Length: 370
Ligand SMILES: Cc1cc2nc3c(=O)[nH]c(=O)nc-3n(C[C@H](O)[C@H](O)[C@H](O)COP(=O)(O)OP(=O)(O)OC[C@H]3O[C@@H](n4cnc5c(N)ncnc54)[C@H](O)[C@@H]3O)c2cc1C
Image 1 (spheres, rainbow, N blue to C red):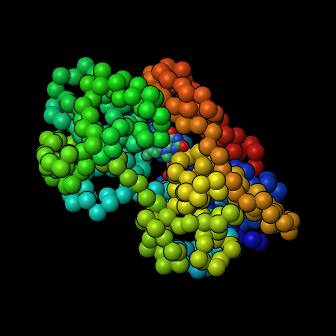
Image 2 (cartoon, rainbow, N blue to C red):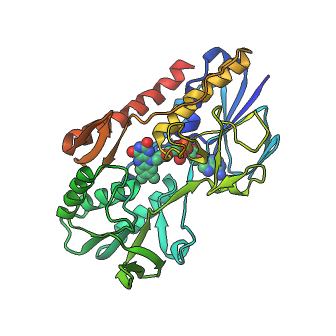
């Protein structure tokens, strides 16, 4: 029996499993290994930090019985074998879908004094810290997508508090560079009304225990902080970097049009989700890591494996086009682009919730489908 090993049960890994042909899935030996017993929706990690939302679904509720599930921590990926904390696992086909880690870009003090959203359990710890914070300054470093979603939720949480001050530091002249300036300005003004103080064009030089050293217009300054949250960068899973078989950049591996790592010479290894660097054929740049592309990669890879097992050729390579993006600004407001339409305010927030629900429905249908 063909052994298919899937590492990581996030958006990419589960999308792969969900889209496998049911007959093939039954005739192969498919094992999912994850370091948690539940799937957590990474796109909602900021809601765990701010409001301790339960964003988990036990794998036992979504995986069919003939998918083996193993709870283990992957340590290293080698040619033909995967080393984990409790065991070693061999494979015929390996699907690497281990998600992201935070990237400190080598900035002094980030590891010691700043806290990142990495997974569900670490976000529960961050929520404990937020709940203990009855006064002082909470600083979010980075005004990209996840930083703004986080500060939006915190602004909503603390909107009636006179004791907590929310600050957001960003090196660029504007927040949310993936959106047009009108949309980004709308978000900035909305958050400022809720009390967020933005420090734009402030480059972070160092994080200290209770302050952040910044540079603005060539001048050095210090911003007070009682709790520093780091959302300024993500990379792929550190396991990728420590696995010598891969030629990685920031713990990510460039993949070809069939999602095999380039420079690896093993067509039975596939990398999907945030650990994969996928080039956009149109402009030669890498696609940004999102749940949306992770889902599409999982879907495409399932088609490759279906064809491989049926001994059918699959010549069509993976091509991705973004369907739109919506960034939440707290409970009832969001901004975004859907297709090529700009959406703002409550409508955007409702659309965002519908997108989230769509994934829930897909997951719940997983058992029935396979
Ligand atoms: C706050 C926030 C908001 C976001 N909002 C959006 C959004 O609105 N839209 C969007 O498209 N994207 C969004 N993203 C990005 C999105 O979450 C990621 O791109 C997506 O989760 C990538 O999917 P993945 O399957 O690669 O990783 P994940 O979904 O993170 O899954 C990784 C899996 O690997 C497992 N794992 C990790 N390490 C190990 C190990 N050593 N051993 C075993 N198992 C392991 C984890 O438990 C998990 O099951 C957001 C991200 C953040 C942080």
